[in-house]
Image (cartoon, rainbow, N blue to C red; front, side):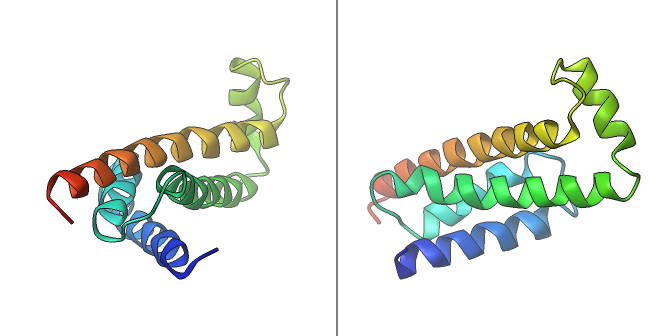
Length: 118
């Protein structure tokens, strides 16, 4: 992992943690957008670095919150979503959705930085 990838990864997580204290779930998209706008990446890393950062952030956060109540709500939601009642699959799906949102917004951030001439 290059230095620029590492910087983008850390900045994305820090922004996501800070913004998630004040904004709704879509704050991770703002974090991906801003990190890609100011810390330019190349090729597929534009999508995959913010994707991985937010995937890990959301999966770990969901695990910590669910672990606090013995995965009670997570089990019920995973039954409703037809995931076999497995709370860990729901946590992975949660991370995947957050990662996709951040990765796509990072692509938009990269395109905006290209348009701005950075």
